[in-house]
Amino acid sequence: MKRWKWKLKCFWKKNKAAVICILLLVIINGNGYGQDGVAGINEANQKVRSYFDAGTELMYAVGAILGLIGAVKVYQKWNAGDPDTGKVAAAWFGSCVFLVVVATVIKSFFGV
Image 1 (tube, rainbow, N blue to C red):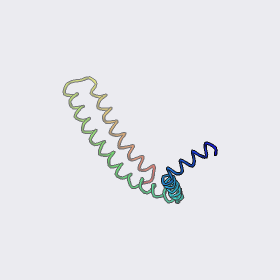
Image 2 (image 1 turned 180 degrees about the vertical axis):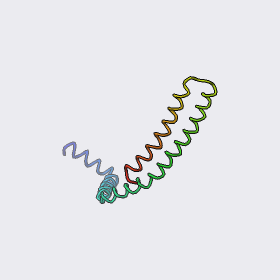
Image 3 (image 1 turned 90 degrees about the horizontal axis):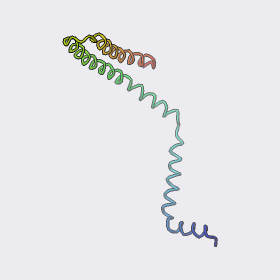
Image 4 (image 1 turned 90 degrees about the vertical axis):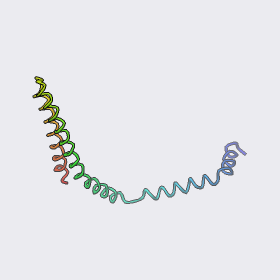
């Protein structure tokens, strides 16, 4: 008997249950992938669309918090007499406006 046949026979005797379990799992797993892909895409689309409102509200809240922090920073610089108060105010105001605009544009772009 050839050496590889002997090794295969010994392997089969020692691991018969494991080989059968692996083959059954491969067959079961193959059946799981045979589902309708369109239904999955539509379900994912609905779930993502349902999160848009919460995400937009979160971006508005983050913009409001950043606006308050920015106002305090600008006030501190203004009271300290720093010459770059205008730059800091523009940067904080610009970041808040950017967050609000991005949230609104994303919401309108995707038609949610």
